[in-house]
Image (tube, rainbow, N blue to C red):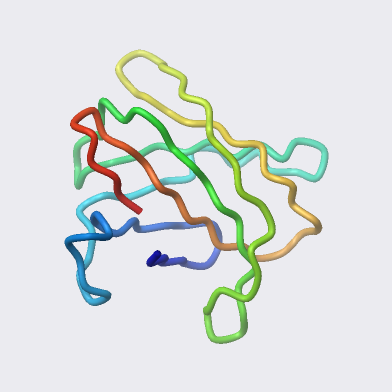
Length: 121
């Protein structure tokens, strides 16, 4: 399974695992859609985009939370779960409730399934 993590909860997802090499970039972006993270409200709101267009028709979204090492590498997987889909107007967004152990810098990895049945990370 290939993962790409960026600091400060920003993720650029990779194309389907069976058709990619580690050097390929994905056309999809996973954006943090909320700035209200706190120890009392560990809510992670996410939106998927395909370049300048919103990505629609996503069937499921699984999320992983990782600690990030000094060199940006994955140090430890802390949490994994499934995000819940919501619709606000014409924007589909996803909410996950990870267990953040403490304040810090974390990486987020997401795997999602499109309406066509394709799986992307």
